[in-house]
Length: 319
Ligand code: UDP
Ligand code: MG
Image 1 (tube, protein in one colour):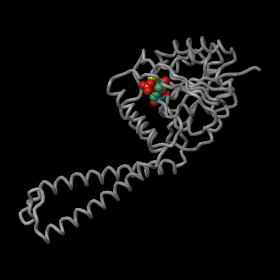
Image 2 (cartoon, helix red, strand yellow; image 1 turned 135 degrees about the vertical axis):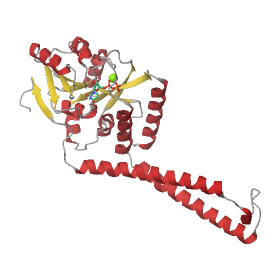
Image 3 (cartoon, protein in one colour; image 1 turned 120 degrees about the vertical axis):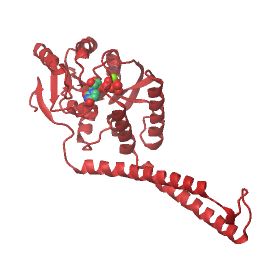
Image 4 (cartoon, helix red, strand yellow; image 1 turned 90 degrees about the vertical axis):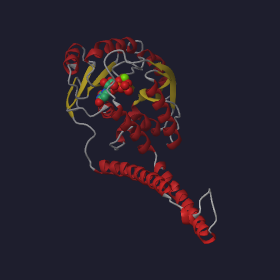
């Protein structure tokens, strides 16, 4: 059987990484077959990523480019790649090679065994202590709130059967959390553990705000439990308030001392301030959370595309 492979590599200002990335991808793909395509998605780079890719695509027509009209973000760039693949199975990998292409043959073997998705599972995370703790905390929250089955440290790096790609392209939502959707699709999936190394060249394109957004998309797109929790905590606070009111009512009538306080002499200043601050901020958090859901509804209701392709190179029959 003549199997064809596709690799998607989203790139945003990765000119320093392209050569090494291409070399490593090719080295590992030919272990499986010569029949492959590598689709670099240029996500509005402002360095010379595109010119580099362009000259490479002239030499080898298996190197393909999807050039987006501006920077649409990593998750959307992945989708732009998915839309243009032609292989039987599709690898997704970052340009900085933090995930090892050396795993391709092993992933491919799993695909041959019948798995529709073979995803990478991070064994141990490197990076600053702050990032490690933040990621751990996030994954704990995500796993406890969402109903997704993959409870591992999800990463984007994976191999997908073309049927999974078709299913993913059928999903019309705009705020994408790719690894969540991939797992939501179902079918036979399996994880492969590996060590994700630090980025060697260039800097991470995810700043603290991008990460915050990705994390929020992950949680809010896959769970409405936060809304349930708001209602639940609201009910508890309401019941507590009623109990406190009843207590004060009896204290007023019978005028007894509690915690050294008799109602008539209560200055109460600090208590009131604390309650106002706590309840005020709690209200704002709840409102903000509801706002995030409404914002997403608004985004989804506008039928804008997730990305706009300016031009493609070495890709036939597609714009
Ligand atoms: N990337 C992209 N568009 C963006 C940000 C990142 O296409 O707006 C690409 C980037 O070039 C890389 C991959 O997405 O190939 C992952 O980005 P990065 O390495 O910065 O993320 P990290 O590994 O730090 O999470
Ligand atoms: Mg990276």
